[in-house]
Amino acid sequence: MESLQLGDLQTNARGGKYLPIEPPLRWNSTEWAEVIFEPSAFDGNGGDRVTLCLRLTDEAAAFVDVVEKGAVSLAAKNAKIFGSLQSEAQMKQRLQSNVRLEKRSFKMKMSLSRVRCWDASGARLSELPELRGCKVLVAVEARQLWVMGQQCGVLLEVRDIKVGESMGCPL
Image 1 (cartoon, rainbow, N blue to C red):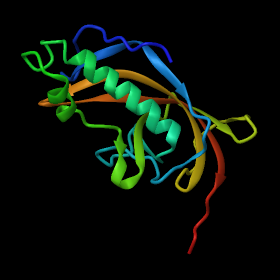
Image 2: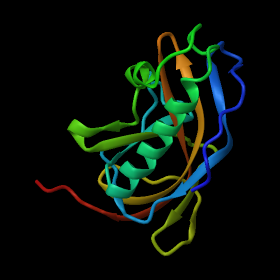
Image 3: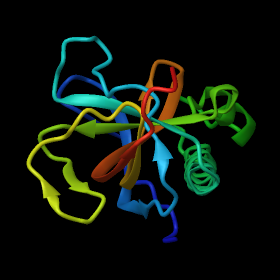
Image 4: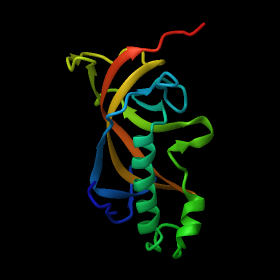
């Protein structure tokens, strides 16, 4: 994996602060992971940007761990983020991880208009099918360390998704 580098603190059009990961780190999963919930927007309005929540695999846990630890370590050296230098321990406390160990899951963002969808044989799909309960492979970019209030986190964005078989309803 490439080494993690953070760019200068920036502000987006809506006033959110972030440090871009330059260049974005790319990761392609090789272990099929179950989609836990149908992707949805945070505010429930059915917008273009949705959260994809997958069952945690060992390789996903390792990727997220490397990216989050690297981002925390680099961000601790940047006084502009929270107004003063932070120790790595303080930054780790502020970090909102993409992994939920108690639920054995991890989350990423996905733009429905930009994500490329593939079926299990590698044929391009014109639209994203219903995903809940399906097994998927994902191509992900770690794009930035976002900062909101006293918290921060790494933005993981799905660029490609390969949809495998459905787990089906067990009931």
